[in-house]
Length: 517
Ligand code: XMP
Image (cartoon, rainbow, N blue to C red; front, side, top):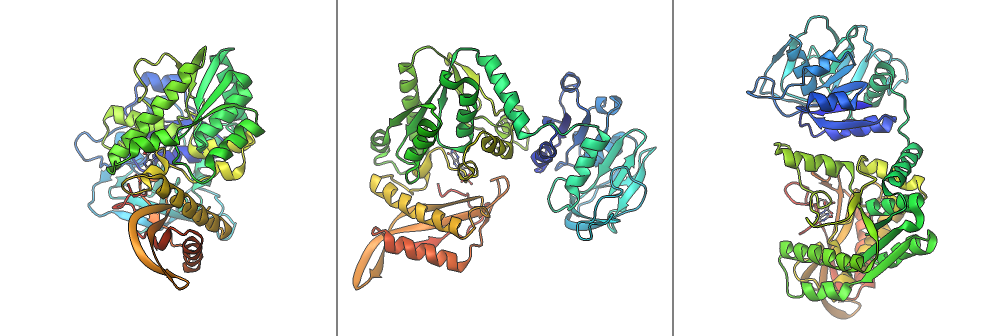
């Protein structure tokens, strides 16, 4: 196992995902984690992430001295390299000029980390590496014992190592796909240098998770809120495999789901897999409560609160439940830890973590707590869930409630469901569904004039939204082909009587958000 120490880079999670993808378990901890935690984790190697700060800034973060004393391999990336250099007696020059983007580094010396990587273009051994740079400061003098192993014109010490002590560092980012041999570099570090075995595979993860659940739960009963989303679906499949009939799922249908979604959830889990699922049809209750409310935050609160009420009512009807299962995944855990720690890099609190009622008597079962989203998906496939379901775009908890601007009504929801369905169907047909990270239709409560045949039509507007993103924190609007937009728009206006106009959202995030509310 590998320990990743986080200095606040936006790429830290990516480092961990790559290491897991190589088949080696790793965890992210903040740079100031205690020595006891490090010793207990007992890593075979440590990676120091990048970060936004300068080693010259007052109180900028440092790696714990312990990591250099454990006698295990250490790899510093970007800021991780700079703090390694400074802490071991080298020098770092500050600079206001950032080098950001693709660069070509030359391997300039014997290097355990970098020699003999395959050149992506020629498939032969590479002298030069195409890499991704994102830094201001740079190392200008090596610590004792180190050699320079790679250089660029503007960054003479682009990589360094002291192979006798197993210290390695790169100024560039091997975790991004822009660094073409990045995965090979990380593999070499964790497999060859640290000596980890690639045992972290979906099949092993399933076996391990099942064993853990059985141990925790024994012969007692577990309740799961099933939403039809990827995480709760994978939890359902996993728990069903682990404990069979000891699992009961409650599926609250708030009436703001996508077309036929409720029926699909029931067909897959109850009919096909034999999972015990209680479906609660609460459409009317949600719509009644939402009536007249057009403020986005108030709508979210109503939906969230009502969801919990309905779920609680159903669960109190059940007897003898000891555990509540949740689809909390690793990024939720990391982000909540960042929130609690009050770090500058904190992102958002997540409703799955820390938002539970104080008086909850049930113990939590969270079998995905250690997993990234891509691992959860692989697990889903391993458990036999359909590929299309597992690789579905994310769908927000409040559902169409945040995609109908202003007041939510059944008429609007029904129109939006149809439009959204057409959009997604055409995206899939054109092979664009996989190329976008999230795509959906938004209902605009504005009427516009059109002509259909000889008749004038005065009806509603929908906007199409499609984005490409890695982390959903930033996103670019998807450059869908005009022909595809034309097909979608034509079908929506022709097939849905209540819609007279379709527009395409060309806003990126930031400054716009992905959802409209
Ligand atoms: P925004 O609109 O903030 O969305 O750019 C980022 C991602 O978060 C999803 N999202 C939500 N998910 N409950 C959820 O479970 C919510 O209230 C919510 N709001 C936004 C959104 O779909 C996108 O993937």
